[in-house]
Length: 468
Length: 127
Image (spheres, rainbow over the protein chains, first blue to last red):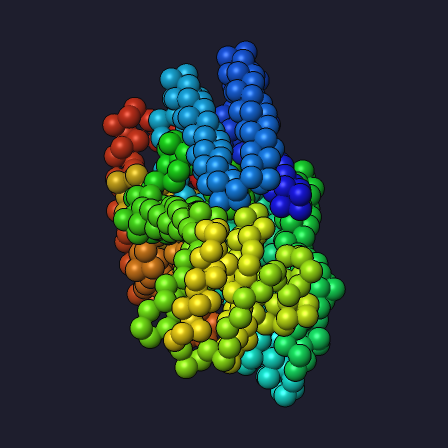
């Protein structure tokens, strides 16, 4: 039920974000409609108005259909999770590709209409503009990314405590938390540096206004990213404060950790909304607007300008996003790499989950020891590591919920991998739920519990191991 | 001051850049002593090669419109072109005016109309 609710919320959130970014490009702003520069008279003409109405109808139908599909597929959660993940990945890929194709196709249609009717810039504008005064002040805009070093220092600081160092060494998740926190800080610092280095936009003939808008944007981005960095450090410090020699972090601390780790997302979204609000307010007083009609480079939806040396440029759909210059071979390579890596991660993830749900638990008794395979966290034990073997009627804990998964899988039908039991402590389970008896193999690293769906197999293993 | 570069023009980009900066200084949009962006900054803003911007700055320096300093970077020259640079500039202007006059005559423009156009263009320059 929890997974169903999480994914239902996630899918509705994804659909909402997609609609806000890609589905609402219908208003005429900054001399553009659907990313195409048009004179206001053309944007208000009957031809364009009816084109936009058709586009709006198609977009609404597309988003409604996909949001509904996203909500419905969450029901598969109650069946096999791996099947749900495969369907979910297909839904997400289809939704993303379909939405971009819908937007780009209509963008191209409107561009073709503009060229056909001979509206401004229809012959192809190749003008680039820069504000000299803004460019000269570029290095002095925003706040230094060096502030992220302070966040990194806060993350490293608990390492002076022996209990934290011990926890990081012995715990299953200690190094993951530590490494992830440092990696997130580094990512924020790199993003901060990249944003400060991005070119300034020219909105007006008035240099002071250009300066104000660009300075405000870089300052807000800087504060949002520094704030996000400190939230990340605070989340790690909360976790670090409860690290002890017991090797466990309580669920309550994890909840606080997750809440604090969610704040960077909120900081970035709030920063973006505030930036948009301030920008619109500032540009409302723009008496000499300057629109550079570079539609010829964006006519297919993506940016392709062989005269532009830049690899990364601001996207026309959402000023928060950046895209690559497809006229440069490296731009194409970056896109293919991004798509390829995403597809590979999705396929690999689905394959692993499929194995967790459908790969059977098998135990092979060989001349050297035992080989237990299950599709997740396979394990081998040498005979000299085995201390005792016995057959139990059931698992030591009262129910399966008494075992917390550390590494492996906990699906509807089986438990496989490393677990921690309330009474048992650290152990390994390779168990089909609802099947008895259970073979307990005591080792130096803790007990291992195995059972089989085939009647009498666990008893055979027990007898065979006792003879060895 | 906004610089516009036409990437499809037959005029080389460094010449367009030089002309835009000279016009900016002439119109008083760039004041004497005012700092210009560094080569790296301006090339990033315009999306052109740094060598192109560097070449434009080099020409502006030779012509005496700007001065460069290792610490301050490039700045508009307070005194304007002097000496040999001013003399070269005058020769170049005479040559350009001669060509413009010829073109005006061939297009059927009379002396008064040509001088009025020159006067209007000059009136845009504050300095």
